[in-house]
Length: 438
Image (cartoon, rainbow, N blue to C red; front, side, top):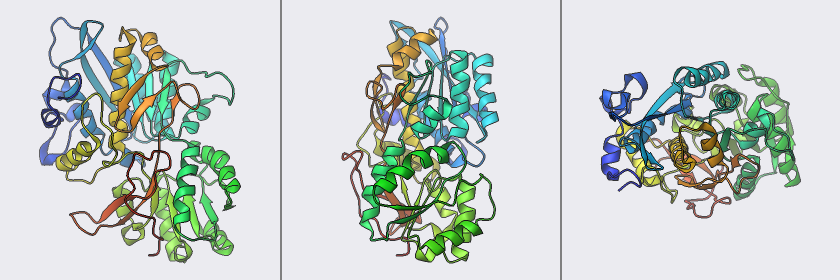
């Protein structure tokens, strides 16, 4: 049985909200069983807000969220018992549309209109940071993920070595140091001249990476060729491509929004840059098969990191669903390949439910926020422990490296394989990195 639910994992998955055509449905379009919690005549209700980018440039991150929300609703369908009181639970999900202004707006709608008790939010600084800021200002507990923790913590005004300015907002995610660990264990698997061309944008992610990862890679013996920060939405990358060709780069690294990478990589192929690239290491885009498959043959052998996968040996504490079951269930329900955001989004609900329980009074927003300070909870990403974070309010998580290869069997064209596990040796390695032009 799933822990704390009283129902089997099979029944829990069955309840996850499968609509016409096998697609999970959330929000206003969901069947009535998910449109509201089960009826408890005398019991109080807890409201959990969930914000992610279902549409817009970063919509790849939101692909599995309707399915995951269905799993969470099934697990919480009998309510959440805290201190002897059983609370009905309602999940109110909002689309941030990959836009900071919309993210802030829907966060305030949840706070002022829906009067939520807790906010969960995920995927890119453009979504997570405005939601976190709105929650902090309103004194509403908020848990977030899938933003490098430096971009979330320092990008919102915290200062190195100073006390945390945040009292209601908490975060778990990989950081710059995790990328460094991944790259320096992954890249040596392919012989190169160690000259790295970088495309780091002028946004929260790019600025955090430039200030943190760049110096680490230089100390690690890599030569960095940086044409400077570019603006999101740039359409012509000819000058950067010319510089990379002239400097003979053999490793390429970037942290762009998905449309920008597609534009750059096609231009790089047209202008001959991709022929000299031995390792194409991408982040923020290229995380999901929908993004790499859109590139056709140019997507094969792109290297990236994965912050969750179905081979991870971890289980959701809220649902009792293993990583393997989560990946297989998503594919069965949607007909799509597993998406690494599924593990992170389900982990948010693990953390949220654990914080509400640990508070002793889930209607007391300060008590819920204070419970986060020492929370430890099992999730598909592993055990998260806020007693051991790199800075207050933060837990760092692994992002082991691998790449997208041409599938040798099965119904899908692409296959993801893990090639290193420096940050978590419990995650199995499947093969070694192969050159981009293999």
